[in-house]
Image (cartoon, rainbow, N blue to C red; front, side, top):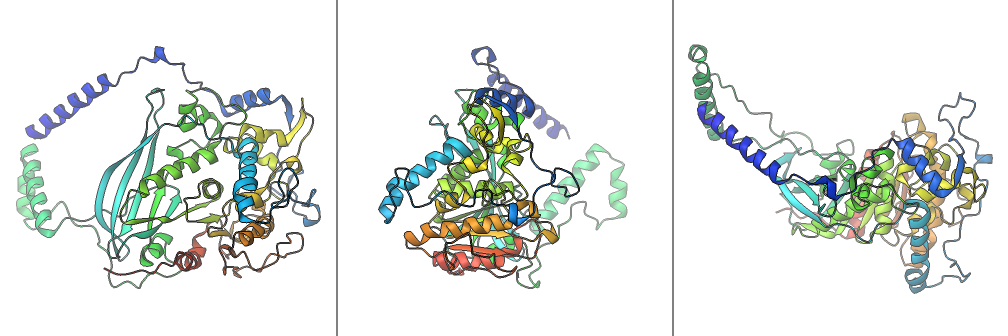
Length: 514
């Protein structure tokens, strides 16, 4: 026990010395603003000259201000901004025109009016491996890594940003392998267990240490000589059936020879308005409020995903050209933004993303533009997005119909790479609020760019005004642009059994055992 205390004391002294070295003279830097979301939003409204915002509709259909669910009233401006007409009125008829003229125009509009611009002075991210372990996920042996992406904060050391990620790769497959990047909450698989010989050494040392600490324990151990305080956890069940469509997506991916990584969005940027002067947005702004065209949380999360992709490009067991990105709900929005703005992502699975994701902004069905501009979601977007819910302002009144771009164009920015749009059903919790039809219309319209670039779309016409959403469980998955509505709730898990073979085929990837 004396040795343990000495080591602990040394560790404490070492930590204290390191902490003293890390003391920051805060007088050299402007203090970060500490605002509530309401204060931050009020500041942005003042910058924009907005006196009054329209409130968002209620999701409760019993409320007098409930959201519209009447399709006859859902399209106040049914004609979408043209995908293949440039701002000077020229028709885009060649891939070259798309890449050089039309696509940059759309990116500029989305950055200025919807998601915000990524600053030019972004700090470097250095990835550090915290843990590497050989483990099992289900029946599959894996190499698991816990990684931290440390963002350089030398220009403003009052804010720290450390991106949290876990990478899991199959150990029984010849690499390099495709990887699905998931936006969520990273956890390592169950830790590897010590061998019986190592476990015996641990128990012997542990018993000796406990007896030194409390000599009365010797009598107890003498009464139970075969008892060991440290026991093995249950190991993998090699006799369990192989993964199927009901298995966790991670097990399905590994069984198909894919790896996966999970990145924590909140370690990049907090999911609230009061956090906009912290996280990566606050770090770059030195703790000060945003300007109207500064990036919001969706674009910040997408930036973090791109930095994780930077790391994956250095992993020899990863095929960096076959990295997909996946997310559900707000993380589905972020996955779509990452896919659209970073062409290195090889495919996207966009789950139940709603407004701000695959659903058309100008549609008035369930969630509205006004829903995103209120304090619960405004931080996802650029400040300028608030203009489209303005009821009284120096520039008048605007609605979603005044937006220069819409989500069909964001989907088109993903072309020609494989993009799978996924939804569930309201009866199981994937609420009508998400406007599944609005996402289907956007996916139909985006198909014209896929076709222009030589890829396959949904296999229907690109007339979003007449195409009807297919029945539940009827997937349109023959092309690089895909759609499927499963019969589950607010998740994309039921679609993984379809997504994995669809993406593997398009990647021309076949699992090869070692």
